[in-house]
Length: 312
Image (cartoon, rainbow, N blue to C red; front, side, top):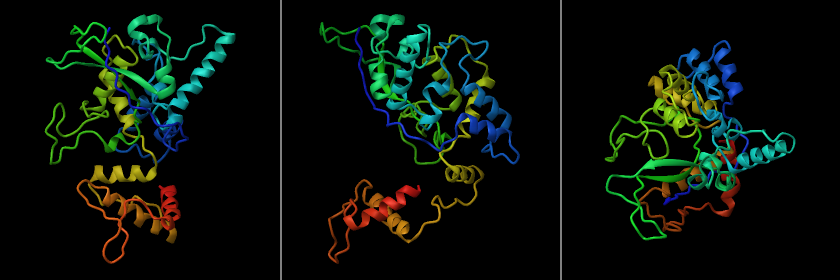
């Protein structure tokens, strides 16, 4: 079995102020709720489906969307979060050998291609927070078996990648404006890290098939509801306001909170560094009039920069 492995490590776990499942339910029920332009009924149904490990009428491996997009990890998956769940599962199995956590399914085990449903080595998932994505090879691309140096007959490749957050997806995805990126399948952008998915419904269906091992075609309303729920998830209220302004075509809000003098100085440093980091910009250590142009902050600027970054 030949398998090409590409690895992108997930970020460390951290406490998030992003919308959790419980918070999303409260939003969908409360008076004066902002469902971010989505039907509130769909948002509520989508929230329930997002955390549902059974999905009545559909046969899956017991995984819910929230098993990989963990609310406590900014709706993504981190190595620390995975390891904590793995250790808890081992502790539970001391008392109940049938204890289960659907995050740990053979499909994401290192030895799945060798041992199939009996696979149980989750080192890559535990150490790097990565899951298996199986992609078809282009028609003219073949793999070479490193043991025999012969061309393999396999028509797919396994790619290990992180689980990206579903926060702020209302601000991502296809951009129908110009210019376009002349590359298929989505020249104007899409979802997933490589923009290969056109809609959130398509993304949800692919996740159910590839990660929850769905065997049937799900109802379209389920996919629409999951899309609505995800489009109502934001990192914070400022990002939500920005998404709302873009959706409504109104004046964009200032993304920054009110800043004190030190934080304003830090913002100026941040803007300077970002501008000088743009492709093609030459940034000498200092200009002829002594103004500092280096991409790295000077020692006396660091306190201001950190103060600003803490407010974001």
